[in-house]
Image 1 (spheres, one colour):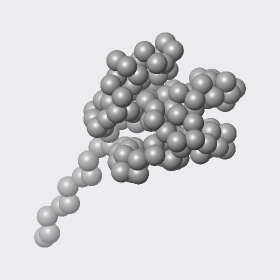
Image 2 (image 1 turned 90 degrees about the vertical axis):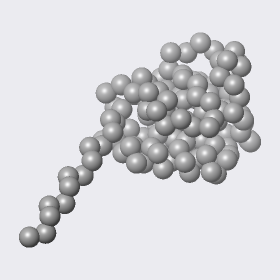
Image 3 (image 1 turned 45 degrees about the horizontal axis):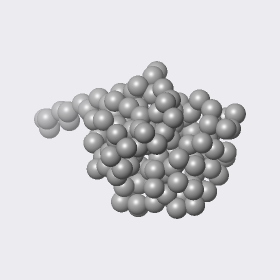
Image 4 (image 1 turned 135 degrees about the vertical axis):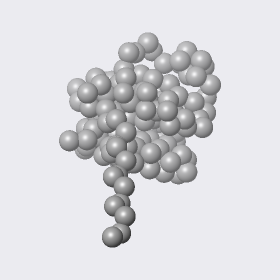
Length: 138
């Protein structure tokens, strides 16, 4: 079964871009637009990983991260922060956690794939092989 990933971003364009990328890679993808929606989705769906913006309405990404870590179901859930905040600044705002990666916007698909592979391990989906060519008509 494909890993379940929750994408949390208040920017619909970014959320749709990440959603499409992860779906194309074969993951099951859920979305939320703010901290409140993220926590509801975490409790209901128990995602395998979060892709989380830091600047969110109704509880910023730091609040969501701390709340996630306080839950039994979320204590070991990996998080990829995808933010416009420079990486070095965001790393200073977060506790040292081996289950966290920080990526800067705009999204770099290769960096996302690397982060997913590092955090999901065997649950990570490698790129799907291309479809076989259509045989020529006789």
